Length: 181
Ligand code: S3P
Image 1 (cartoon, rainbow, N blue to C red):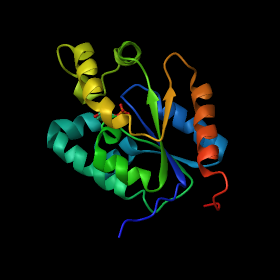
Image 2: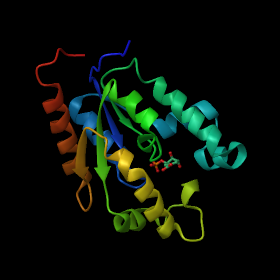
Image 3: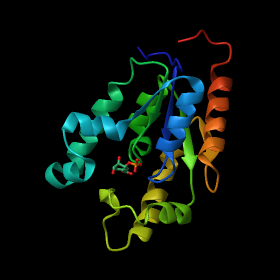
Image 4: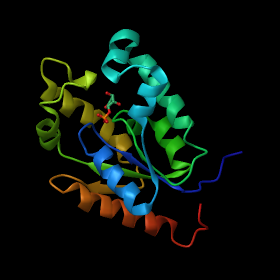
């Protein structure tokens, strides 16, 4: 039997550097929800930071932990969940999130992503000779799945608090008239 959808959380998906964590924190504060970051939960579970986890156990181990962490959120409520950039690009994880969360894609152009991440070194997938080209390739491959989100917000060149306000509005519209919790 398929589980009925009951939206009680918000999940932010989108590419690295799209502002999921900063927007998520602000949206959680406005909704009086708890903010969780799947990357932080993975690090807790692994007892390692993400670059170390990728280096010592590989991306497949990271993806398995990501799947477990996301499965573990299904029973929770009143959460704003910031996901890692690969989670919302995985149709299985996207479907799992949709069962309990309004899924919001924060869209940012490849140029802005590059601008935002170029001085940061903590993203193993961008530790390649041409990270800018990698961003374009990955984004092109992931976009068809990100696009399955419930709500798309253009987060390019917008302030985090403005984007958070739109997330909150989207959640209120999506849950208007449904019982609390
Ligand atoms: C990843 C994005 C990262 C982190 C990991 C893999 C990805 O999260 O989960 O490095 O596959 O795009 P952010 O989107 O928070 O940077």
